[in-house]
Image (cartoon, rainbow, N blue to C red; front, top):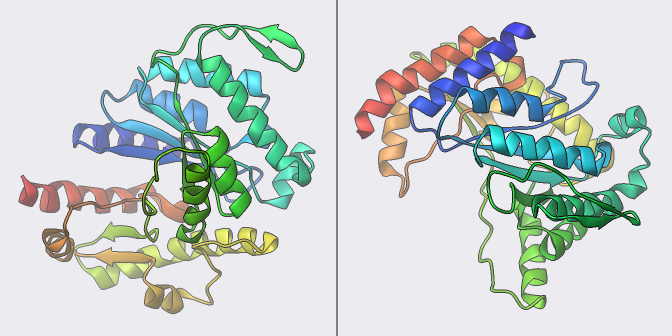
Length: 305
């Protein structure tokens, strides 16, 4: 795992040098595959190795954090990164994680609301009331007002909560965006417009797409089946579903392995060239991840210069 963390830092520095827009990390807890449980120190390390790229925690599971300590950690991260961090706050959904932290799942909404309100107050840099006492979080954030606070979620309740207390909303599935849009307008604010996200698709590159798929597909399958099992447990809407095997995975197109020429052709036809990479998806070995990234660097990017 130390080698994987080192590779992640190297990849962040590489991406920053090539003009990457955003690096996002997530969290899960007690996962048998070693899923990252602590995104804040990871982003602190990435921020120290980079200069321009923005970072996003997408998402932080608020019910597992002490709000005041979270505010301190986020402000330190904001200073280390010189204001390059945004935070997506989520309620969580994996039952075993709530059991691990001894947090009742029926308290999720209440805990998310308290966390967001506490962070907003703390990021203001002034004393504020917290659970009946006056507190003052120091130092102040580097970015005035602190990191952006966005809510994530896949339910009507999460969408409407985001409209009331957060700076924005990132839905897990596009269908719940309309609840956010409706609530924003009910509160007298401008229409935020259509859903800003599309289907979540991962692209990887290989000189031979068939050989690349053979090497990478087991890791894609692990990711979608892990998320699918977690989310099916709660009966929630999700872009991830358990698959019977790699052939079903391939047909559905959520994960794609392309040659550099194929990616260039697609992006040349796109109204706005954009690609999302998930280099070590599902436990992908670092050397396989690097092979994809280097193809992008040497055989794709120069053709858009």
